[in-house]
Image (cartoon, rainbow, N blue to C red; front, top):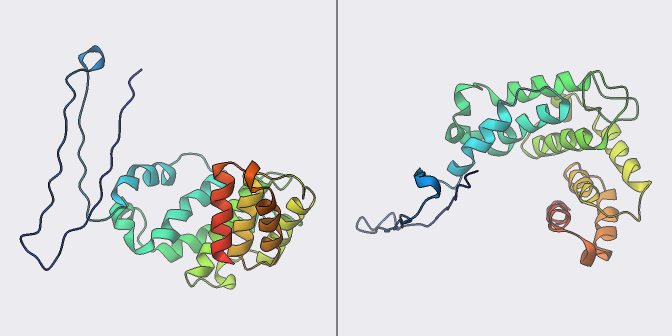
Length: 220
């Protein structure tokens, strides 16, 4: 087993000063396991470059459950005009058309309780794919999409997420924090109730829970 080390360096130079420059040094180790090793150097004008492989991995993931489909849409919505950094512009020529096509298809699989199952043919709703689709919808709404364009029953989805969390109000987890964040994105006042529950037990929360809670507070 070989463990590869990744190091990222960021900085800025003065655009107006043509002589401004930065020098970075690379220390080549004098040892290697079994005499094997390699060096890859990536230069990018933004901080997005190192994300390219991860974004493409998610976008090209071969399985079609709704959670994975919604994960594909996140970088398109979040990074939008920067998708050329990830070479996604060769795969998606019209971002909004692509996102709308996916959400229109998802709408066919929304359950009566407002949630979504893991797979299009799932009989029951599951909280995680429902949260992922809720996050996609919330971020899309922030970036100018209309509820009509998304085709999803947003109110029903909000109610499903709230009901799933309200039934376990004493249980604090990353899912509850993620739910609070998604509800806040969707403009649901119940997000603050969940965040207050989490804040009251912050000392017992892990980093993932605190991170999602922080995102939730930012959206209030």
